[in-house]
Image (spheres, rainbow, N blue to C red):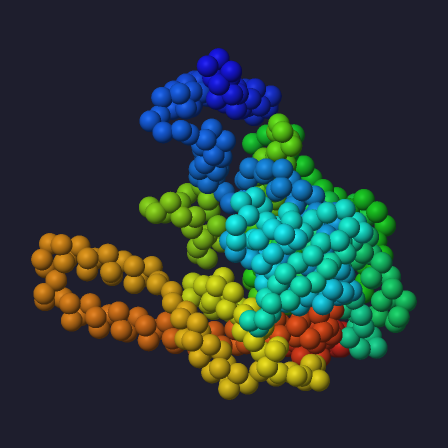
Length: 544
């Protein structure tokens, strides 16, 4: 019994020890000690006396996640697998099959095979559903199925997979995989260089530096830096990338926290590559964090013209803290501010609405700041481009379509039904969009909006109270009108959905590398950037 008791209370005791190693708790020492003692006592009593067997690990995991959920989505507990994933994200190196894989209960789906890496060499394609790894059936495996594909370099793994209803097998020889921060750079024309920066891992500055020097050697007199879809990463890498284009000693970003040691001011530390070359930065709604530090700082310093859609709006900085047994907690420690003094955080996690949801900072509450040349910029809503391309009407319905993998699955069907030879000439038509809408119906796509849920709940309450007789007709009319509205929302997002479909389809034929070549020819934002850069006075006018 003593041993059992020890096991049951070891986690809260460790938690107690961890809590008191931090300086942030000195001011509230008594209250923290009191709450931990209450929690420890509760945890012990619950495990000892609950009517059924409990799993202390699961209970603690739930307790931790519930506690952190009240803060912000970036303050997270990281188990050993999460820590490894973070390491891979920061370094870009790991050993495996060389593919993005999505885990389901009964299968592992290849989302994107990387060109010339093991999965690709073994013949696997996007959409393939792995149902068996070696002798292990995915559906019955209780552990983390994604781990089955991992292993030492040069070891082999046999997989059984389904493709278009047929079952196949393949042997994949694992290898070292390098995920590049700069997956592509090339010349758009004889004067304009194009650099895609997809992540801020610890190679981001090195690879961007190399790309910039190489393009200048090829004759580039202008640069387009593409940060679209870049979720961010390491702060120091962002500062060093800004430093490529601005002088040494320039303020880039300031962080402010309740803990004094996290209050820091970051300046460029090195000599730049080129402080004069005309520069355009492309951003969109998925450009976040370090991407916003780069784009926001270059905008504040009037060093680049920003083109695209409003960025995500993440003005928070996280730092991982080591815990026991190989785990970590990633904590939001500060807010960051660009050179003009603005914080572009768009969601307020500390003043939530009555439903407990973080609310977006209202436009009337934005504060005005000035760039180096006196141009107006604003906080509270991400980085606003100097040249705006209307963002997609990224409604809950279109999010649901994407999250249901219906864009991805349609791309799979399209690939196997169409033998395209000129992929750079691909233009999805109205007919293609109609086919996609029919595909949604065929696959029984349904999504209940919060409005519908509220109406159903109200009608259910009216039925229980026997008040539904006179309102049933109106209720059915409202529901019917809502369904029509949902259909119209899909039509309103036609351009956005066609862009997503095109991107997915292009990658099926020519991998991600070919997608960037497709962009250079067909993407309207790159065309606009190239047009601005071709006229010096036009470019400079945006910065005045």
